[in-house]
Image (cartoon, rainbow, N blue to C red; front, top):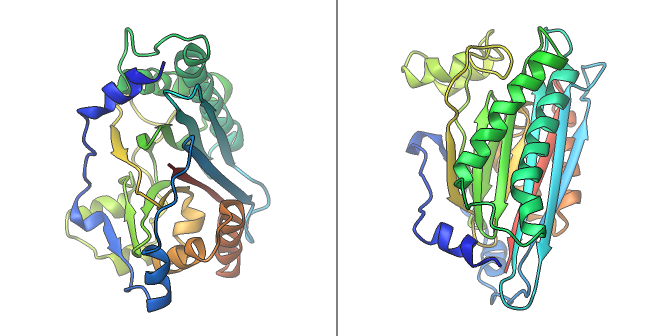
Length: 301
């Protein structure tokens, strides 16, 4: 049943982000290098490990973030591939119905992907008979802003979504919530591009990273669901890092906790749920200026 997954991705290569979007942490100490170099244990059937955590933060009185996770495996002893849907969204502060906007967008996209991807697999059909994986994701992305307009008029939301099939992940992103790859050798790589004013100013060379971190308009977005003119979504497919993980997170996390600390926390925990909660705790310890959400996904094979 899952041969079509392998055929689908055999010819596909991960799309790379610019070098400026890659952040490398300090070299690993000797004891962590030894952990990285340990012999790989074969996992059968391959599957996904998932952790989540969320907090309102220390300076907000309500939560406008929405998380959605679903992961499963249909193992028949021959073609065993796990698959999952992971979504993180943030209702835009200062707009009406922010929490309704994020919830509506996440539900609409989640329902679409379940209907057009998950259900066909369970019924023994290929979800790719008439559409590619990118077209399925794009169809769901069209539904999300419609739901925001209907259910939260005047509201808006960021949204970062990941559709995982085996060791392949297809990412859709709008706003300033991020997706990262965290590698066992210490690299923390951003695989999304912030749709924010300060990111654009950085790309134009008008400000540097330090200036961006304290810019008075650092939270201003130029693209969000329900708030801007329709735009063609950017959807990319990547290969998940071997023995590493995928991190989806809010600006309440990445804006408060350094990449080095993010890596140290994740690598220090074998339980991804505990790692997520410690990431949230670190953001709150740094002041918790915004809602904080995190999803960690690891592919084991």
